[in-house]
Length: 469
Image (cartoon, rainbow, N blue to C red; front, side, top):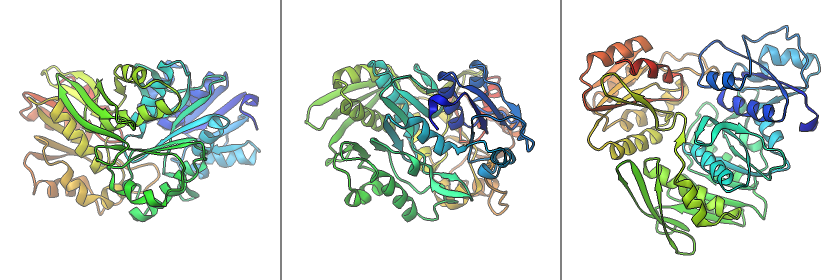
């Protein structure tokens, strides 16, 4: 099957962020799109409506259409979804999202970004740099919007490059537990970091590192690996990597591209770094934090490798404004509190978010509202979650957002987590539901504060109500 031959694709679970980006790519090709999903509000609802892509609520076991291809998410039972089973009975070709990403990106120079934290931003930065410098990339990035580039998915006819996130999660949990990125054929790989995540797939960090190593070693001889050497797990696998061209980056003295300093002033992030030729450069960023300094260096390395002049790239990246749900400014509430939203859901990401928030708003108190994402992650990283919030002036904990791929685990809860965090810091509140969280915030002294909604679930629901406080 060739992409140009396809006239109609049905997306089972179309509202998943990675699925939506592929649907946008397909629409750019003039392919008819249909889709189904749950009635739950997703961050992608608005995007699909803006692009006039319609979907039905519920998964139909009858499935009375016959598209040229069905693409299924890993959630909602994945390959065991009733629509998928019926489509196979009708001889409709079926691909998982991971397989479809490989299908859409074949015959292109594939730039893949992997890691626990940073892969969305680096992918977005790379796509932005290539687009800004007239290389017209295609891309499928797991984010609603990239500012000021546009939507997270785009397919450009005849473009040389395809940029994507490379996800280590399973192709279809319980049916095909291979990492999704194992299906890709990357030319350039960026590794932002390696941490223990998805414990339902990787019981220990050892299995995680092996998956990353296998993916990295798929890079061809004329390709490139860009890897964060500050990260302990990334550094530990370096000796086992069999790739010809490797460029490291970080704050470490032995990094090929070394960050010398980053300073925040008046909500600008000034980053000074040395490139691999020991030439000093300065870039002023509109996105905060040392992690975004790192993300920027990784994207600049990639842009130079594909032929963009470093000075042009630096000028371009200074215009990058971030992405949806990553340190995203939502607005000012009626009580004159700034509301921000962030996707951080791993303890390491939360620590970096807090550090960035304090540097961006040095004269403000930082209030966090956190919704843990998945029982398995919360349980496996429980001790790390207890410690990662130290420094928030106030913290509210909503109930755990259970993924569609797991069952409730009553041995772990946000109430239990809040009790343990309370032993280390003050002003910790278990707020549970959406409604109770808003009620709790209304009862607190929130003068001179910035409120962050944090998590990978549906916590963004809160933002419209927080603006009314």
